[in-house]
Amino acid sequence: MNQQATKEASFGKTSILVPVDFTTDSEAALVWACRYAENLDVDVKVLHIVHDPGDAPGAYHQSEEDLLETMEEVAQDLMNKFLAKLRNKFPDLNALATAQSLLIKGIPATRILEVAEQYSVQHIVMGSRGRTGLPHLLLGSKAERVVQLSPVPVTIVKASYFGEKDD
Image 1 (cartoon, helix red, strand yellow):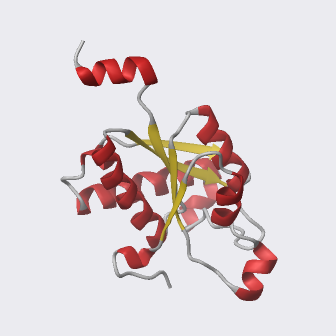
Image 2 (cartoon, rainbow, N blue to C red):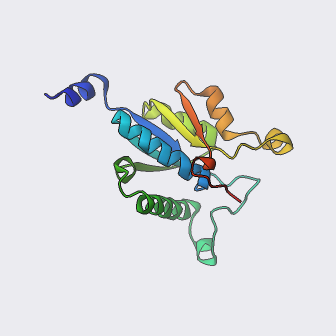
C-alpha cells in the first residue's frame, strides 16, 4: 500500500464543501477552494441549495421555457452551465475538473451544515457579497450563519479575489 492509500485508509479521503449560488462570489470561492484542495490532495464537493426565497422569488426561472420545468431541473441546468464555464476558464485546475456537484432542496444555511456533516468535510469555502446595514439586518447572511454554527473551518471568498464584482 502506498503512502496516499495508507492515509486514505486510516483517515478516509476528506473533502472541501463549496456552496454556490452561481454568482461571481461563488465562482471565486470555487476556484480558491479547488486550488486549496489540490495543495491538500482532497476532493471538492460543489453544493447548490435549491431554495426560492421570498426576497428573490422566481430566481430559477430565467426564460419562458423554464416555467415548464421544476426548480430542481432549472437549478441543475444552472449548475451544469456554471461548472462548464469555470472548467473552460480554468482547464488546468484538476480539482475543478473532478469536483462532484450536489443539488439539495431546503433552507441554505441549515442544509449546508447538514451536508458538511453527512460528507464529513474538513472545510467549507463560501462566496459572500458582504451585505451590510439594513439589508443584512433584515435578511441575515447565509455565510455568517454557517460561520457561526459550523464545526469545521469556514473560509469566505469575495469576487474581488478575481478583481470582479457582481452587479
